[in-house]
Image 1 (cartoon, rainbow, N blue to C red):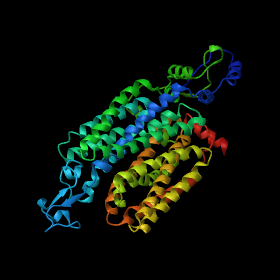
Image 2: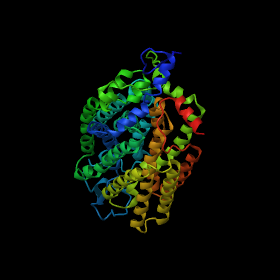
Image 3: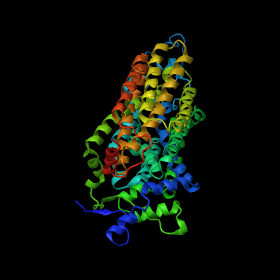
Image 4: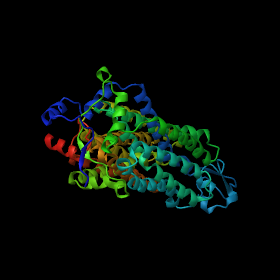
Length: 511
């Protein structure tokens, strides 16, 4: 094993004098704390540009609501056709689509009589790609590529794959490209949140998190507008209008946004880290910025094994494995609500554009609520919101289709609480794990969210026959999963740690 070396060393002096002077030097957390007090326009613009990646990620996550929808139809020959007829038992000459056949993939490739598994498979394929990609790519942000490189590489390749979808000659190629698109975008959500929060102190932790959450919301909110404007056009245009801007933004953001100084220091790249901190933190008299940092292992030579070293570090601690397991259970339940509810708006018997817009709009108060929850206990808040979400979802089954206004109100309330719980969980993860494995843990937990999203489309299809298979199951699962946080430590008011030992020692002292 390589010897430990200091991230930043001081000039040679007597040991006693060195120790005495080190006590007077600010730590990395102190330095970033000073940086947060001077959250200037450059840091603000970088945060906005980086967060915009979530805008395009959101569009691809929910675009299937419109491209994969089951379009409406009408009778042409009323002697053998009526509004309640089974379309699969009618001849093609007896009915017609209300919109052009190119509006969705169902009408475009003649899938109107396909089973629910086939029609739900494209969106599940997207999330399956994200699920697998998250496990294969997540650790690269902690070990070799870094936060910035992996995020914008993921965003650019996602845009390329999405553009290629336009040229799909058949359903199976479409399915494969959806999988590739999901695989490429798998590290975006967690990576952006980690990159933004590692540049600031705990004062700005929740606030820069709101940048990412609000950008994701705006992307979701933009979809109904884009889909409505192209309601009589091909589904391919939706992919065109969302993929090309994402491609250009990824290139611009790569050259504009800087790397996380915390990650640079863990990689032994102290000169680059200090340059970033000097550029944003004022020093008295224009002197050099010098900080006291923990010693970390010298960075080993690059190898394939080192790309996944953070997994080894994570699995070496029993407390870390316990936290990961509990958080992944919680994330699965939240994922069912967060992705399942928007994908199931077609089951409400309500205008699909309005219902989708209402769901997207509710994400705005959910991340605004996060601002007011900054000083609340993390565990209690998550339990409260997951419980309310579950109750409202189950009440959707009770409401049935009798009063549509009541049913959609309960669905929106459940989705709002699920969104808020998801945002809280993301901040909670950042506080529970150190810099050396933070991106890995964030991505792994988010894959559990995606796992919930994989089941969502199938539950949506089953819910068309009976609400209990959709709203009932989602409500019960999210309530049960929410209570897993009682076995996790509280992190309110805690500072971010950089190494596994530092995280463990801080909590040992706390106990």
